[in-house]
Amino acid sequence: MGVLASGSGTNLQALMDADLGPGKIVCFISNRRSSGAFQRADAAGIPSWFIDHRTFDSREAFDAAIVKLLQEAQVEWVIFAGFMRIVTPVLLDTYPGKVVNIHPSLLPAFPGTHAQRQAVEAGVKLAGCTVHLVEKEVDAGPILAQAAVPVLPEDTEETLRLRILAEEHLLFPRVIKALAEGRLHRSNHIAWFTPPVTS
Ligand code: GRF
Image (cartoon, rainbow, N blue to C red; front, side):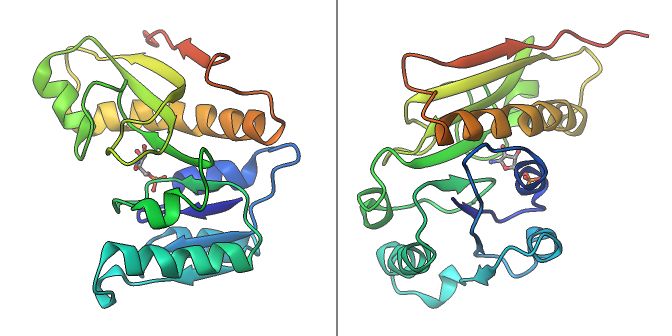
């Protein structure tokens, strides 16, 4: 498995800390040199690469460079753990049905950026995260798993982000392990609802 991330890498950390069954993370790639995920990958002894998307003429050329690295590492599953780039058929057609993403909303609600802010502003009472297969449309591939959390009256974007993130760290490794074991298919999903913790 190859993991791609652009942000702080807490989901990468959750994956590295988890039992993924036969799944093994063999490389990490980021388009952001400042990604905190590099230190996490280094600490876990996972080889990592920085590929700056700004140095490529097209999305396709950037994806071709990623595919080359993934193939050299003999990756079978491509895992987006907060990878903030739109990918093209150059990558998707190389790994059909094998590119997985996590998104911090209950898709199809609130695709794109600032999903948690969108949820707070929309006034929804349930939010959550979704693990799905990646297809050409952004945040729109087949849904594999979802975890729901309440939106509390006093929530801000940040408090909701943290509540959802805690569920991401539980859901994502479970999904990736199930995929590695061949136990998870479109008709056999994982879903749960986490009730609020009250004082
Ligand atoms: C997560 O909220 C994930 O759902 C989204 O990007 C964020 C990455 O967070 N796609 P981290 O870098 O794993 O902490």
